[in-house]
Length: 70
Image 1 (cartoon, rainbow, N blue to C red):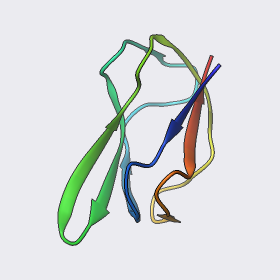
Image 2: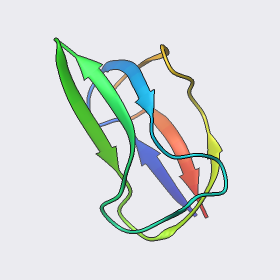
Image 3: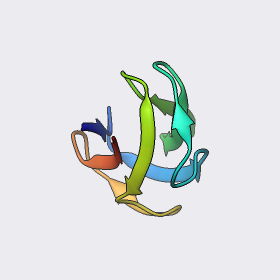
Image 4: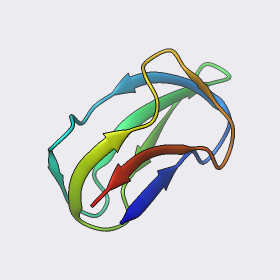
């Protein structure tokens, strides 16, 4: 199990992946918006998206878990 965490505080601008999607290392799954910049959040290891812990528009702090990859 891999927890994908926010690298900085910001709003969830767009969720790119969907529940059940297979992802490879380096694939972006979420885009955060902070200070008018778009920050892509990528997975570190391959797997399948099992759960998102955020929705578009949610605010996250640095280190908050965004998704779980199995």
